[in-house]
Image (cartoon, rainbow, N blue to C red; front, side, top):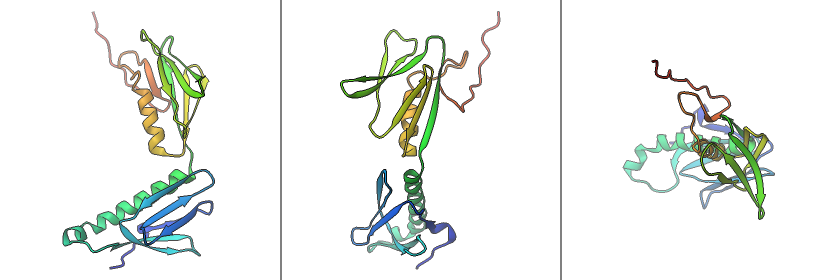
Length: 191
């Protein structure tokens, strides 16, 4: 059963090199910055000259009849995981955050060879955030924050974590918001 539709074919960009080990069922993609690996569940057909990968429904080992029913879903999952890895390697992702509120500030610090973010968010204490090694975070202004990285999932997780320090409140809209986000404000009490 060697079924591959057009949506199950992936073209590899020229700046990315690929290594495939069929005995260990692992495929590795690499460029000059990073490399990522994926453990495979189904067989692949690789055409090196065209730089194309075809994902099949053939299982890598003997499977039960229960597992054979799930092969179509596994094939689609395999395609989406491979596409996600290729986009993570070839693209640089960015999230922009704004601090809205009087006295809300962020600054970058370097203490004992650790990069930190120093937040003033209206609490009685300051908040310090350790910047991960594989991310770049810039503070161009005291109320703007840029998060750059190669993994979409990691960049969005860090942006959501930073946003959770001061979620925008619904009456005045003060807090940490994404630049593209619009906050619908509630109407206050009328006397």
